[in-house]
Image (cartoon, rainbow, N blue to C red):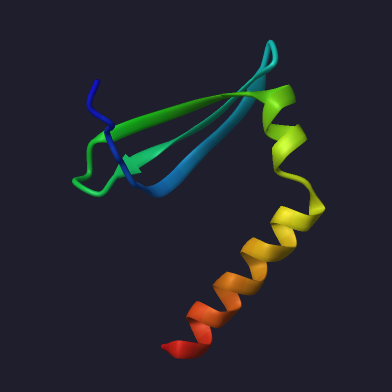
Length: 65
């Protein structure tokens, strides 16, 4: 099975219902894209440490510009 990579270029909707976490928006080509996560699993993996890491990487990116 071939792996597919998509970029959620613009997030415009966030929803969490029935243990499913949804991020919706537009992909790199402007088409609608929805990503669904298991909410419990997402919280197990994305905690304060990962959020702090993401923030630091964004700061580094902005400072390069």
